Length: 233
Ligand code: SF4
Ligand code: SF4
Ligand code: FES
Figure (cartoon, rainbow, N blue to C red):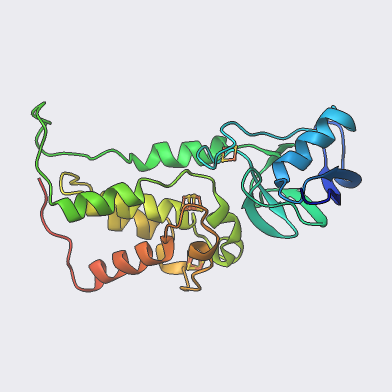
């Protein structure tokens, strides 16, 4: 069995209701070299700081709730191997409720406002509908997005410009490709700042579920350019 390692974690702490400014608190945790960032955070909570705010649910990379920034890079804490020295911060640019817990209410509202279920001209007949198998596969692939906001946190355009961010563009492309959705998703994408993306592909590189929001944006832009959006029913 591999020797245990000692990890130093500096965690950004702040309760915005009580603390005017954030501070970094230093903790040391000893554990296996394979421990994840979440294991370190949980150990700190259980043994050193029982008032530490953080969140997680599934621990298998499926719920997206454990996302944090480690040494400036947004990651899923339950999947990322712990580094010997880590500065752990809440996922920017979102408001912080406490320590590592962000307020997701604006994110959830944005998803709701986009109305991401197929909007049909004709009501669903209640029976299964056929779909091109390749298209069905592509739609299922995009549907693996867990809404973790890691891509949004990493996107340089979100920082600098008026842009909702790659995760929302990916969801709009999901509907744009859907054969039974009749809403104009390209207009929604433009309203959400799609043209502010400068194609750096960072969102694709950091996505923990191997999705490519950057490609989704390129595809929507091509649809716009070549007027490829067809009438759907
Ligand atoms: S490709 Fe576009 S959306 Fe993705 S990180 Fe770069 S600027 Fe942001
Ligand atoms: S596209 Fe990837 S990084 Fe962005 S929210 Fe979805 S799963 Fe997370
Ligand atoms: S706890 Fe669910 S993705 Fe990490």
